[in-house]
Image 1 (cartoon, rainbow, N blue to C red):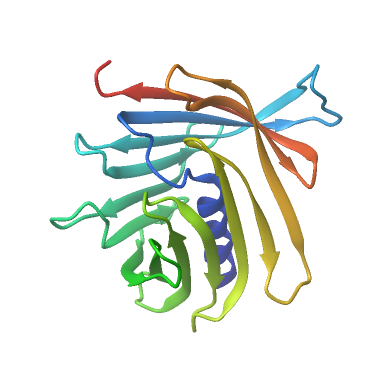
Image 2: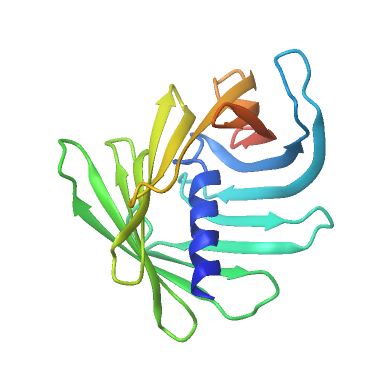
Length: 222
């Protein structure tokens, strides 16, 4: 169970945008397999893997994330919890068919670099047992610069180092703390909307195209 939770959290962090799309009320993202080989002239898009939905409040706060499989079944429902601030203090999520909630408790700490904040997230199951502790280094705009994946004692097992260009992530480098695995992920934008937010992109792992993603952004004034 603990291994499955760690894998889910890593997958969620790696696939979610690091900050809400400014002015959005919802986003709908479709994730497809790519059938290699792929090149700049041809995108052999394969089967749909999942569809991801995000909804936001009028104040821009992200409220809910939902993943559905190709048949429409909900595989993840994730709801962020707020008090009177713009930053969530926790979250509750349900994975697969289970009705038992998994919980997040969030703390915000001063970063070691100027203008940064460390978001420390403690994850626990329905029984209250801590399953992992992750840390996310945020810049002044709330973008994730680094993601540190830890075990139940907070010992870091792996990190993501995230890069950006404008409002979009350009990729991240995943590296295990023991040096046993290092992988580079690059997002190659195919199309963007009038505000510069990506609407389709290719995800490359170690230079090899692996996924094709499309995204519809519903803005508040539409």
